[in-house]
Length: 552
Image (cartoon, rainbow, N blue to C red; front, side, top):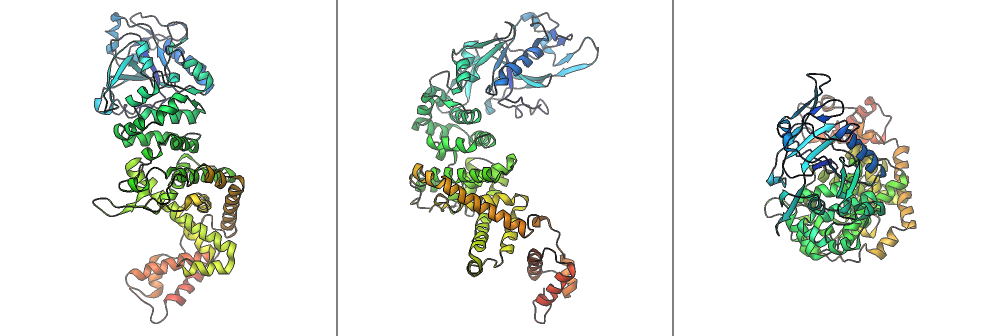
């Protein structure tokens, strides 16, 4: 579990919080402000007791080295000495000073104010101890309304604080006053941590109905740490009550944030498959009405198959993708079967259903929408290029008859120019188009039956033979791009600019014909990577400088 980054200011500290932040909770109820530290050991000036050897800093490092070392711990709570009312005057300060170097500011603490509108009901302090950002919060108890995941919070006991948490492995306390004792107040957290098991402190149905977002957290944590979900969690997570609560009580922004954590984790394919097996796929990747009613809930299986296939090609090619590139590819692959669907909102123009899902159901970026559309388009172009490579002149003639370029170099070049440095993502997606699961789903839902892309179909299409064929296709496309010298064509400087073309043809002002000339120059450059500006000028004179050629 990585510690969170620093807030830029107390005002926006709340938005900068991370679920991975280590939490220091006091044993007693009264809220307190950050304390003033004195001396090298970090002992409070009021005389409250802290363990020897560096106080809170030492304890924090012990937690990080001792509990995080397994690679499994997701969060914990550190308990400090009981609150002493005599400390109240010292807690009014928000700055810490080192008495050994008078006047030197040692630490600044930011106060994150309560904000009920954003589900934050208690004030929190945040400060940096060593190289770790620490949240200082009170032990608390929570109660939930039936129609909201926003709890009513009150100060509580350690046991109440532990039981309100989502999972037992997230309910461990590190008592820095008792010589470094890890307190497992649920009685199961430490063993679940050792066993790699995700379990809720309270009955999972109660936990999930209180806050349905926890079911997505269970999927994210389970796949991130390779933990098993307890059978009771699987049973509750797959219930209709939880699905309805997830759709009605949780904002789309929160769902998108949890999904982003899954996509950025080590096993995004497994996470989405788990969502599908639990029946949560349609609640997360929700289609807009009336498409949702027409397609029902059976479209997730095909989406999982295409996503898994794309991930397999990436692994087979040994592509090193950064976080954003992997997100682009896996999202586009997942939505591939939905690419032909159109959503007609009550107001405005029709938009692709894939764009509506990304924008409205996930609340992800416009950049994700744009890249998904470009990847879908260029994947088809690259698949056509491969057909030309395999079929020779006959395939080239058929492609040209459909309005495409005849020369495979131009087909490849056009696709690469659209995707720029991400062109290999298009190559991967082109191989997935060969799958039955990738066939466009019709708007009437006739192709969205649960069996399509299901266990039997997925076993065949994701089997060794089919995966090998996709990998070979990808290698052939990459080899062709390299053989034609087109890998960097998206960054080539044009041999001629608009002013040069206008001067060459004697045109006085630009117009639609200029764009066609510039496109012809770009295509000529794809066919003649080593061509010179003089040769390009000769081509322009011959094709566009003849008598009768259209001029602006």
